[in-house]
Length: 247
Image (cartoon, rainbow, N blue to C red; front, side, top):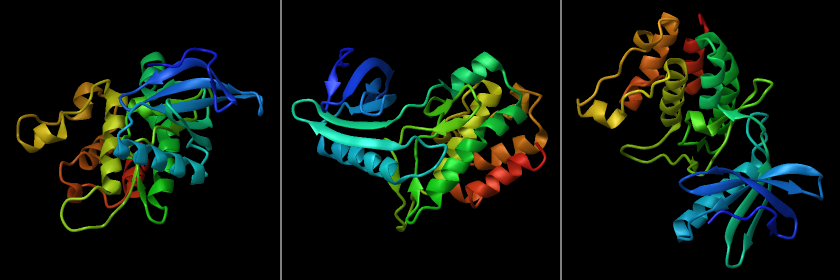
């Protein structure tokens, strides 16, 4: 159940309003009187041990990340009878989906703004060990009034673990980032990867939906959206270079 406005958390943070309600957590805009600034406070909505461990990992990630396009972690605390909470810098803006619906930016303008997301992905993928976001989508990107893009919601993020067989690596984020760019440029979500793998759906070329998309950008998107990871670009940097070299 969402917190009531005015609720004081950890004797410090005053919840002002519900900012976002997701499948795994609620995010509130709150006020921190000790710093005199607004913060975002995320609440874990699940009490199962695995969800609690994952929420703790998200808090650890944000506490150690130092990147201009990722919100800075401020505090992490547990309240008996209520659950886990994570305080972080509040990013004032709108989701990437809302931004494209309001502004109707051109494909090159979308790439220009989304460079911050690419750089955030580069940063977490270059950590030792690498971190995989696993939830890159238009609603998890915040665009500010100054056209800066922030990658948010690390609730599904995990450390890359090299092991035999199918695995989740940076190419997973590459696919999701490509799907996000496809959706922003065409206003349509690309065909489901599982349905494509089963032959039930096919991926529509993005230029069929938006002829303004440059052909090199289309080619880069289609490769990054390959169903098989080995058919995508070796790295997110390679993908971004292909997107922008002639965009």
